[in-house]
Length: 182
Image (cartoon, rainbow, N blue to C red; front, side, top):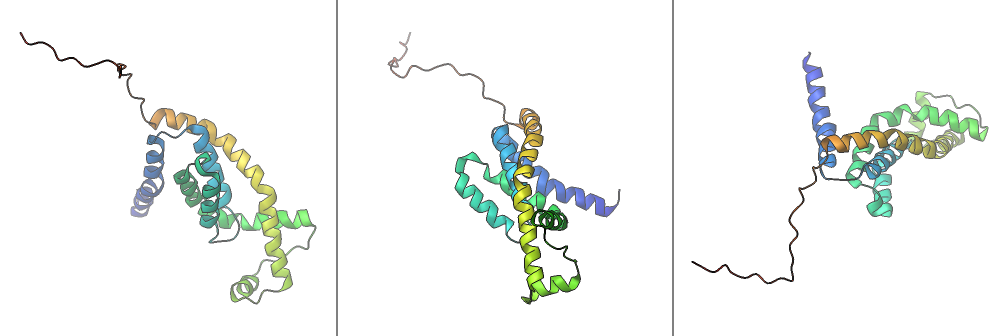
């Protein structure tokens, strides 16, 4: 195995594997983990770079104990490379929904957006990208939840905390009497 593959494996283990094991060992429920992972990835593929962490933070604040914050953030982190690859499909989907013109993707268009000189067509394409994501997001969320639920049931069973052994019940109302000495 090459040095780069070893480094990639070590990086993946440190950034994804270890945090996932820590999450599983803390005793969260599979339904909550599946929901949180689906939410993190769905928000993580939001087509505007740099916004996804903020969106996840807002979702965590709004949902509170319904979601598992570390799982949402880990899933968001995992979704980062996927985010850029879905911009064009979201754009084309949004164009299809809105009936808008096909926007040609050129380096000049990106330059216009980054320099603040975006034309009406560029701004319209950003709107189409967002429309494509807003329409697709509920379907992505449900599909991921359905996919993740059985996976997390297995993972929690395999790597989750072991339930403590039953203890002898203690009657708190009885008095403790010292044993008499012989």
